[in-house]
Length: 333
Image (cartoon, rainbow, N blue to C red; front, side):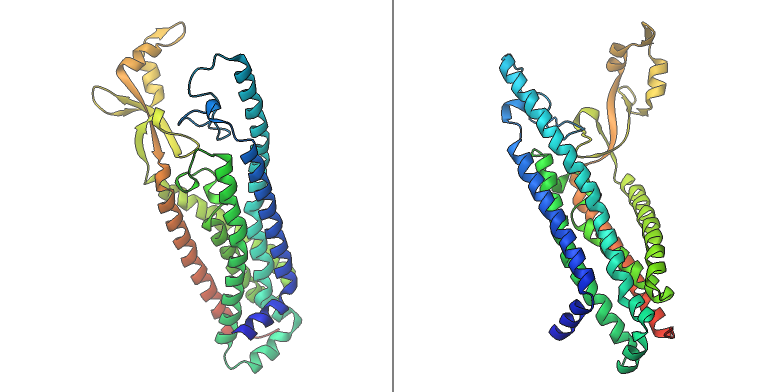
């Protein structure tokens, strides 16, 4: 096994070196911004106890009213500096979301597609006792190595997320949930498996890369749409004041009728309310309705990640099985 791994690393040394360097660069940049955010973290006197800013993930006002103008100015300056680094972090994490996809395409297409394009498949399949063993050894070991390399930026992305929202546990928050943690690794492996199948079918690397990119984007969009639909089944109505865009997935905001307990949409409430100065009477609304939000609470983040990981893992096995079928029945070009 050790010899096999060494030979695979040598065969795909360009791909593995490029992917490893990219992952190290991403992880290093995320750790650097983490240190910057930690250094700029707002002190306690500038923070809310619970109410975190929706946009930036940090407190926008102190816990107690601040009467000292010097402290107010200091908090504002620190908040601006933190916001600047936080925006850079958001951009970096967005680029980081593309890294596993590109890595999966780069190495996935080469696993079988390169052998077919260079003509070495004929010799390899002749010398190998079983195409099944030849394929599974390469596909599974290369995929395992890729997953191990992608663990680094996925881990540092979680660290950066915690620095962006220091008062929130990343394991209980949906903020940037799709571009950090194990889901990031699994999306890379999903793209890798698509590349393996496409390379085996097409037999030429460049066309396979283009096709894999298109198929991977469609697969990810379909997956995200399916996840969003499933997440909606976990939603529950909560008081609007207790929900947070920085933690929960807020699907809808409406009102609950205090008399009947029924959920009423905002338009109906505004139309039923007496009009004052050209608009609905807020006092009347507050007297008859409670503002509520339909949310998937951040506490369900771990459950969602587990289901996402399992679903991608199942798709991964199906695709690799399809690749095996193609390799067994394909004639070398």
